[in-house]
Image 1 (tube, rainbow, N blue to C red):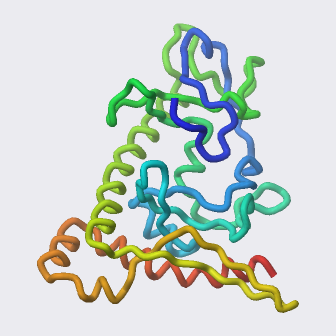
Image 2: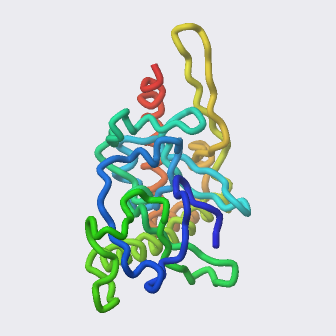
Length: 241
């Protein structure tokens, strides 16, 4: 399977024989995300996410570029989860909401082939019939599981569009390295690097035909949501004080 996703402990393919008696009890906290300082988001999430988080771009395996929301400025730090495990923002990224389910590609699967997986390390999973069963007594998918699978499939479709958007930005040379710098009262400073943002001047200098094509593909709305979201960097820094 793919490498272990963020904050997932033990990702395994969902198997009716193995997980037929498994129930899912909801957990009312987000403590499992506490050590995550950034989370992948899909393009469709930009408008809502931009109101509360800085949206930037990062490079993953194979130099693939993808958008993330910054949750903290230090490694293993999520400033949007308090001591009670409550999420401190109105909008919660879909990557978090889909947990403990996930679609994962295997070594022998194509780009459009995914296996439905679960995090067996999720504390809400149990065989004591607490919560809702994943499969009914006839071995059919429960309504809970059907809704989870529908969410995963819709999310995956949005990821395809997001990849096209990021590829377009990269090919046009619009992305450049960025850094966030925090200054503390004691005079100490801290810088967060390793992410990218759209260069405004390069965007302005873009060929009109290319710019028109971006508008036609609905990419420009995403670019401006990203640029506007960078104002949230200061509020993120203030959370450190």
